[in-house]
Image 1 (cartoon, rainbow, N blue to C red):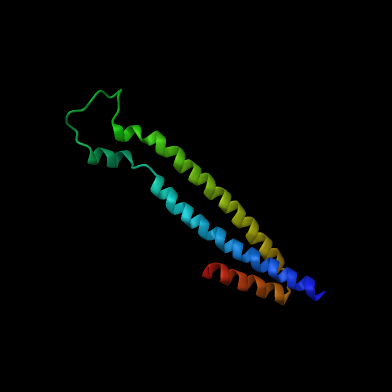
Image 2 (cartoon, rainbow, N blue to C red):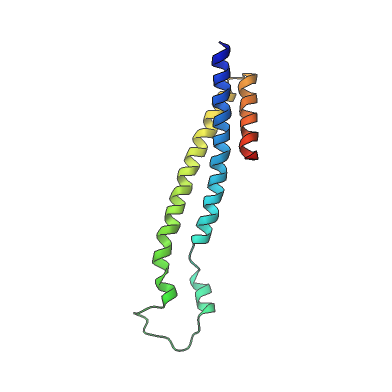
Length: 119
C-alpha cells in the first residue's frame, strides 16, 4: 500500500540520519577520550626537575594523578565501543533495506544520510 511504502521510506530515512548522528557522536567521544589520556611518563620526566627527589614511596603529585585519569579514559573507550556496535547494527539494517532493490527505499537512505551528515 502507498501508506506502508511512505512509512518504510521514512523509517529508513530516520535510520540513516541516526547512523550519521552516531558516527559524529563517536568522533566527539574520541576527541574527549584523547583529552582524558594521561601524559606519558617520558613527558613527565622531561618536565619535572631531577634534583631534590623525595622518597620514591611517596610518589610525585603528577604521578599520583595517573590512576584517577585511567578510569575516565576507560569509560570513554567503553562508550566508543558501544557507539561502534550501534553504528554497525544501523549500517547493516540500512544496507539490508537498500538490498531490497526498491528505488524509494534507496532514495530514503541517500536523503537520510545526506540530512544526517548536514546536521
